[in-house]
Image (cartoon, rainbow, N blue to C red):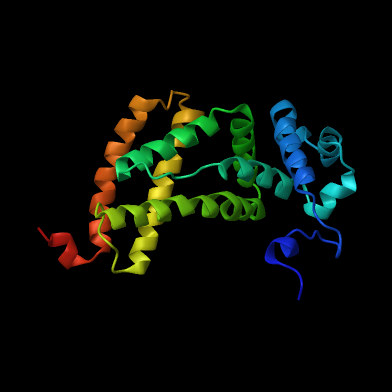
Length: 222
């Protein structure tokens, strides 16, 4: 076979019709702009197509409906998150939390995230799409950060994969919940001082949780 994974994934719903990365980017950006201006209820695929400068059929070849399009538009923003090695677990967490807060400060992120979360309370399929496209994708940062901290000797290595997975889920929930609440609900600044305090609390709990994941012997060592 001559196709590569990247070329295969670039094929839209109709065989032989390649997807354009530029068109995808324009459509997702137009979707976010429409959300800011119109809100969820007034946003239509026709309006998005006009803003993006593409035919409406182009949208339907890529996304089956409005829900999928909007979630992907919001998910693209959070794909910007990264976890550069800053030398310690504390510094790594502070860095990614500041990135997260900076994304949530953008109008398109605020409008988009609040819109899809509100709509998902009435739509189970949409909630699953959010979990798959945003939550599960960003849990990679938790796993990456934990592996790096274990390699540095800052955290114990888990002996129970099930317990480790539960801890990773909990860490993600704590970080995402705290930062979203700070930025979007209380509307208080998630500045460096707040991030330092939050990180101290998180790392203290994380050390205890990962010691438990490593098993009774490791947890009681020392």
